[in-house]
Length: 144
Image 1: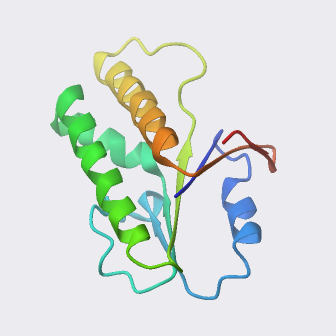
Image 2: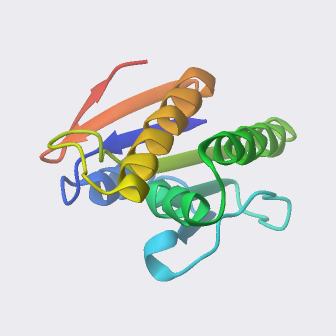
């Protein structure tokens, strides 16, 4: 699993398109396009699956569930995604999240919970990912 994180509009999508351009068989799933959080990737027959907009899916979870349940659902997603990726040697999962942890702490309880859950979720995925890149201004820095 390859986790990509960076600020909004900092070139994550363009960097990924360039980095993974050699792969013909890709499937892009984006929360920004209204796609639901894919827990099970078994229906995707592509060698590369790219999940974009993790922070949006996490916000949707925080609207319905408390922080602990959100973390449980997220841990289940990561486990399912790892299982899918490891089931075939040519499979690669790329997960993209926008960093929402910087700046002023939100006053509203629901926005603080979203920020907290997203921070924990990013820590969890970073610990499980084999590679982590931060993208700022279109440039990557590999941190794992």
